[in-house]
Length: 255
Image (cartoon, rainbow, N blue to C red; front, top):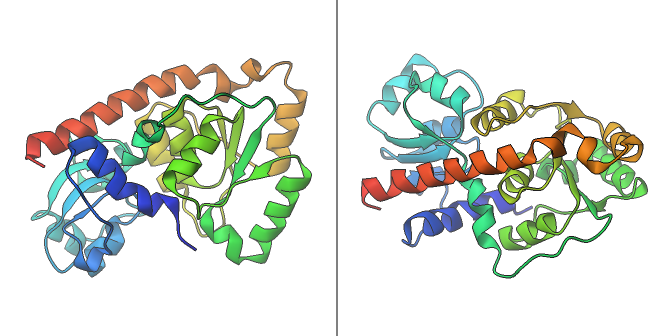
């Protein structure tokens, strides 16, 4: 299944720098951006790479750290990845935050629209398929990650609320100022990457099951009483700060 997060990398690059880019696997890439692919790139890359907003998943080995010494690290996804590199000064931010720049028309909210955007692996497991069926029964519109980044951004922007185990989806929501709840991800997905992003935009991460999300929405006295709604403006502002820093990093590099 295609994943809109992969397709967002060259779009974000072009938005931030006004230069064209196209997606390529790490083995033939000149740069890496969106995704928890730092370890994959260190394994597969055939040349030294430029790193722009990429995230890690786990600790780096001494050999991986040594190889990174010759790479051009412009930015990483969040403070946890920065700590893996031993750098507190590197720019942090996920380029998926440029999702706000994909909207070419005013978006009108649709009353009562709530979206569930599962991790792309959910579509290939029995547990994931059961979760998708459950989401539909609970009244969520299920959004597949196989859509284009622009379509995903438009759908999220017109919704009242997003529930997602897809980190890319949560990042899009933060960029667009849409309240979002993190749904417990598939077992093989580490908390690290979610916390890495959330800490970069000053958000609080609490994983919930779909049933817990539905209950929270049904029992809230108003949408504004939910914590994810209460601080969405602060997250949106910090997302803007991250976008500016990411763009500046590319421009100063001469891209």
